[in-house]
Length: 458
Ligand SMILES: Cc1cc2nc3c(=O)[nH]c(=O)nc-3n(C[C@H](O)[C@H](O)[C@H](O)COP(=O)(O)OP(=O)(O)OC[C@H]3O[C@@H](n4cnc5c(N)ncnc54)[C@H](O)[C@@H]3O)c2cc1C
Image 1 (cartoon, helix red, strand yellow):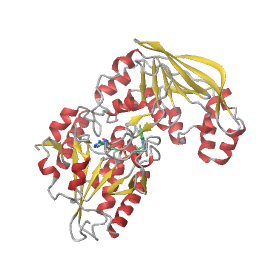
Image 2 (cartoon, helix red, strand yellow):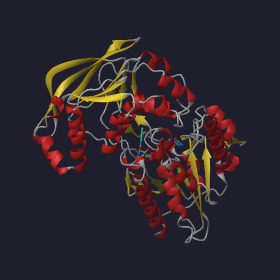
Image 3 (cartoon, protein in one colour):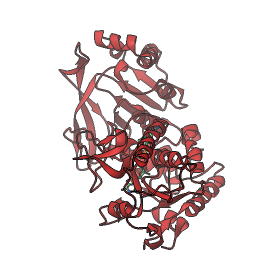
């Protein structure tokens, strides 16, 4: 059992909001016991999707990074970037962490995308929002030129999905240079977006305006763009009984519907780019060949009385050169850790990882990999606190087994890793790069450059 007089050592795998909020809550227990927390990430930089998901033009939301960064100032926390945790074949095995720490928190997020499962999904020019978001936020896994040519020749795009990520993607595609130049996007991304030939952006939803998952604030932004206007077909805002029921019982749905009804009845204005909201449209196939996408075929749908969706047998072919599928994120299995494949999460009880015989001592989880990809950034704080409470309860009841090995894992890791000071060097370099373009920062997208700036020798 972990000795209450000893310093407790906890490893947190994944330096996104869930990992850092968990670390913060753990450090908050210092008054009852000495504790040190090591937070590791496979990327050279911390903050997970706050850095590589939240849209670069949402400056105030992205500033959550500053709050998360202050957690790293605590003297009892260490950050190690460039550390991939796996079964030990390419990175460091989870077993090594479990040996060297009293408890391990798995907070590695949900980084894969959900498939749409329609013919043509694999054609070149059919991409996931995950890939596109990674590219425009400067994720080091994303090649800089990945979408430059595609955007240059794309006039019409279908963004499939009616959640906030789909709205982010549509808005980023529709903004002009003045609207994007002060973001932290890497220069190659800004150049490709500004130089794109995109004129028409179709936002495609299977159900109606009342059933869409976006928030009203995000939705309204679409009508505030300098060079783009929104169009909605009035036929899409004729609500059936099940939608009426949603509108009466759900304030967000009521607000969203009111905004969309306004758009459907407003006079069309000329603009360089048009965002066309298409509801009751179920994608059935993507047409094209090995040179690219030509069209998206959708079937018009109708809502059943219970709110389900049924096809009407009426098909519409929408000419497009690019399809961006934004139908959700999905967690991945970590070798050696129980996984609920149906829900794509780690099975858990209030954050205690559940094996076949109950909680696995010393193993915890928080964030998207614990509960699935839902909620806002702040949801991960509450979620992480719940897990830390479960850990404290286990500690109080002697259910934390204690580390087997007292050696500092990071004193002997052979590969270069980025520690907190290294991250600060990357951070300063990004701010200097940004200052050259009169902005707060420019994201360093290149993996090798980040590692060179940040890595200490192993
Ligand atoms: C496109 C997009 C836009 C969003 N916009 C908003 C928004 O505007 N407002 C809002 O409130 N929320 C937004 N969210 C949601 C928010 O980003 C998430 O709630 C939050 O990031 C989830 O936190 P997490 O720590 O669970 O996962 P993540 O943020 O994904 O962090 C997980 C970390 O684990 C690391 N990792 C993964 N695998 C390994 C491994 N094997 N070894 C080591 N490290 C690993 C990853 O590199 C990553 O840094 C957005 C999400 C997306 C996808």
